[in-house]
Amino acid sequence: MFKRKPTWVIGLLTAITLFPAIAFTSRTQADNLSIDYVKDRVNLERTRPPNPSLEKIPVTHGEDLYNRHYVFKNYIVARSQKDHQLYLVEGKSGKRRLLGGQYLDFIESNGHTAFFSKVVKEHTYKEIIDYMGEPIALDLPHTSRQLLTLTNSDHTLKAFNDLPFEDILFSDKNNFWVTGNARPCSIWRISKTSQEIQKFAELSIQVVPNLTSCSVSPDRNHLALATMRFKNEPHVPEVDLLIFNLASGRLERRISTINIEVSVFSSHLPQLKMKWHGNNGIRFSETVLKKGLNEGVTLNELADRRGYHQWSEIDLQTGKRCNVHPYSKCLLLEHEAPPATKNVSIPNCD
Image (cartoon, rainbow, N blue to C red; front, side):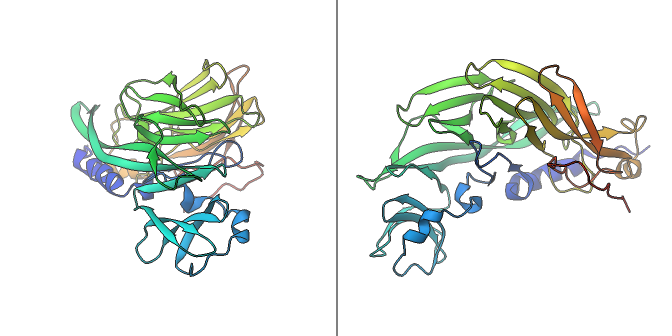
């Protein structure tokens, strides 16, 4: 019987840490309080759809500018292809004011105040897990970010508050919702107007802040929060799905230990793909493993492990799974997000 070498999976985790843009993608719904972005930075401007208002602001000598976003009347922020720095650009004159480099990212603007996120520190921390009876130290990514603002009357970047955070989960009309970078991980609500900071929820100390993702219900009353932790498998995180009432902060439903394992040939750290179905149900992709192959398998058997992925829906009223639909015949390289319709073909493993 061949025992899997811990160095193999540690090498995988090292690659994930060094190239997080390949591995970590957090999904939230753009018009429902959230934005799609890649988790190597809070690079919101890199994947956000173009702003129609930009058509009204022609930029003189702006041929090298990309990722343009409207911030104030006659002003945009954009990066230059020459140095990839972030600039505040006055449209008519083309005059530029340097704001920062690759660690500074534009989040949003209300026409009077523009918000930015700046990475102030990147490092790793060690998580010790018991893997096949042996302790293994995982190096997990850890980032400290700061919220900055720029106003129409003062084009100087200033700190908005002193709360260091890991990531922005989503934004609504009045608040930013962020994951704190201290452990145990907490969810914080930051007021855009009063700068008030309020702790919304505190999570388990095993939760990895960098891997937390969310989705907000269409009526904006509930937050579905997917939390990850490593316990016994260095390449397979354990996932809990938490449903919070956004107004009260009350935890209304917990779906524990969702299996999201993917093929061992995948270079992606698996993530929970989820989508709201109305206001009372949430769909997600999970893994079902064939019984008898979970423990004591050889490396070849592990690579050929027979399992499949399915979309499941949780009824928030009863907490029960419903509308279960298998969509693969084997373990894929990554999960697929639940579609609007379930009339889909099941891919083969050949």
